[in-house]
Image (cartoon, rainbow, N blue to C red; front, side, top):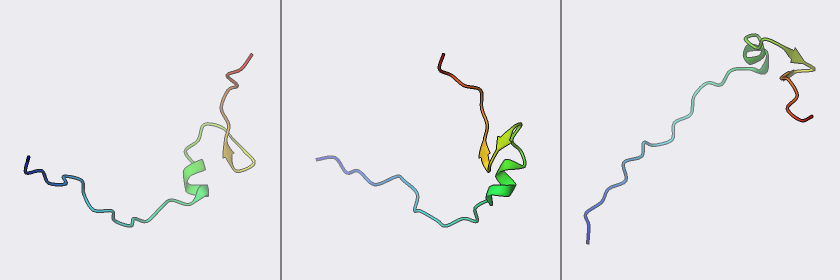
Length: 41
């Protein structure tokens, strides 16, 4: 058998950005969401 070890790091909680902070960098937004060009016909 192979002597393997788990090489993944432990999960750690981090401070997340608020919706307003995330959308402040968006080129376009609508009703609290990112607005992107349509991709279907």
